[in-house]
Length: 499
Image (cartoon, rainbow, N blue to C red; front, side):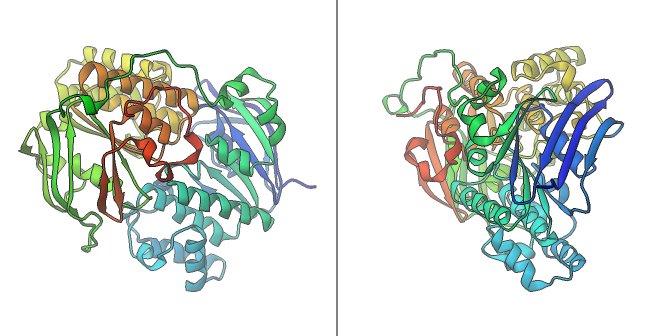
């Protein structure tokens, strides 16, 4: 069988840092080749190399051969390839025209990508879609292109369990039609189900490769075994007392009658009421597109077109960031699902983390730099890596940096939007451990938007369920709502807070 994509001894170096070192890879039509590895291992860099894309200033050796093949690409951060100034309909019509397709084929591609109401999606701008919806629009683009090979970087990240199941089925169907798939993923269940071959990367090098069954059942390298471990070791900790035996904590953040709209008047939230107590964590769950991200953005001043009130300690918060005081900005911090879009691409990440402490806490530059370095290190991101601009960091590394930037201002309320969805088990573990400690030590209040059952169960006291913009249920441990979460992360060695 002749490979569609052939990679031989690929080496990519930027500014003295080797991102990919001697990678060999074969990808075939009608087969799935999965790249596994911790954040920063070189998966995305390798995937982009298949498309002829390299970091600015990169020194490249070796070869990548893609003979006359049309390659589709589904990025980890879909907003990065969607023009924010154009409606989805205009974007997809441009793609369809290149291959002589029209309205019928656009609708079919959107439905195949699990967007059941194509007309509603076509009218919207990318920012009016959830992260999961944006990802499915990009999948529709790849299907319209008629690609012989698709490079998919975390295609199920941030998806609810039903959408994830459908996207996995759709990718399998595409492969059965003879399209090859290079899958970059931390979702071991998806890789186990789809992959024919697995390539394991660590620090830019291939440490193991072979048939998926053999790699999963009998890994030969210690780094592969660590990556595939479903229950990372955890330091024992004392479980918090069940909330049912203690008085309800005083309300820190209150939402009253919140009805939010997109531009043009489309309602995305309907009369939502929610209360977050001091030191409490509420897991906000629901299908992709149910309004979770919009609610988080309203709380943090990023979405202002709503009626109702958001109160901090009983006092109304201004709707927009520009109207909030420095202390109000510091009090309620938001960590984006798309961490790459949250950073200035021209400046070192560590400096941007430190600047948040200077601007919102009034820290001196030296003190802020020291605090930023401490927090970044605690989250598993060495200062040497964080000293680079965003283009030099992986998606998982940027996610940790985004969390560090929020934490250095010492917020009272932290809104976390799918912050564990694109992380490997070890990185995810470090973030959850830190958030548990902060809750116990500083009474940090969390709104945790997630499809990750184990993370929600480890952190949350109760669950709030959104469905089509309506808050349909509150209360109960996240483990009582397994159908709303991703199936890939149902084990955890963190002791649950709620029982």
